[in-house]
Length: 400
Ligand code: OVM
Image (tube, rainbow, N blue to C red; front, side, top):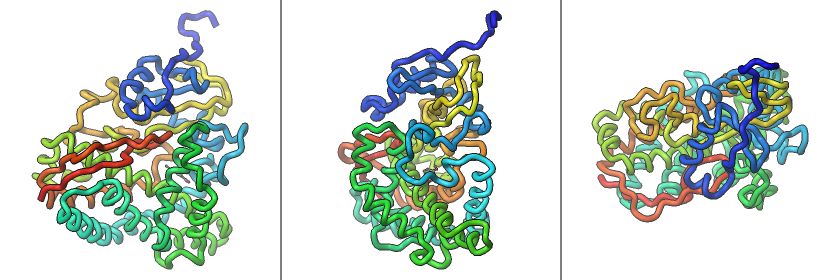
């Protein structure tokens, strides 16, 4: 090709999404990622990447070219065996993906969510009331983790004893999407014990009769799936549904502590809780990055990407791309967040997003009707993590 429009190879840039500096404050790095080009190549890891909203969306919406079956972490399952049997939804492509996702999404119908609303509300009110009484709390343990470990784990129907393993497992799943660095090794330190608990919680015999888990097994009873496949699908709830919402709750508290005028706006109208959560998802996306793999040579944004290449999608960068958002670095619950990619998008778009919304709505409403001010009271620390953005510790004071 000789035209001046001939596709180019991706520019190579010196941004390392798995460095300590990036992980603790990704935003300046996101700018370099976006400004490097529509698609870039990351020098440290030799993978392609995009942080531009337009191209993140384009990749999410073209699963034939950008597949998930080779894993959605940096590791290519065709070259390196995965650390666990792959997810039957996250790490598959159509037609298997379509069939398996339908089994999950049937359990998450609007009627099913309506029936959970009361329980989530009661638990959010109970928990927040007890925390307001205490005043000073460690928001990660006391609220962000405690809430999904109670309401979401109950909804799936897993045993009460040992639920802390779900936090450890989430750490494995999401750090496991990164390279085999120190964070990966630390998350996997107790892998066997943690995986064993989770796998056992996913078995028919250990699930409560009315939860999402047992509803998955209904597919086994009709012959669509085997019991082992049902356990693997149930595992997806436990992989994707705890750490993500826990980090979202922590990030939400931090956003409001740092932007008190936004907190006052929410207090004035608690019906803004849902809109506020979408802005948290845009502004501090818990699930920051994942990957796709090209199934063939392709051109994206005028850049040629060879076949069988990993491409990193920075959801966090796309959600603050100034080409898409005005004043992207301001937290404003009144803005339109339409088109944010905090839940991904396309055929793999978060299947549990309506549960996440329900959880966050209830937590934010319970707080907004009881807490006049959220104040940071100590040194919050972000958790070093290959994939998730959130806090390791978040000491706050809740003023009645
Ligand atoms: C799964 C899974 C794991 C992590 C994340 C996710 C965001 C799904 O095991 O299916 O979706």
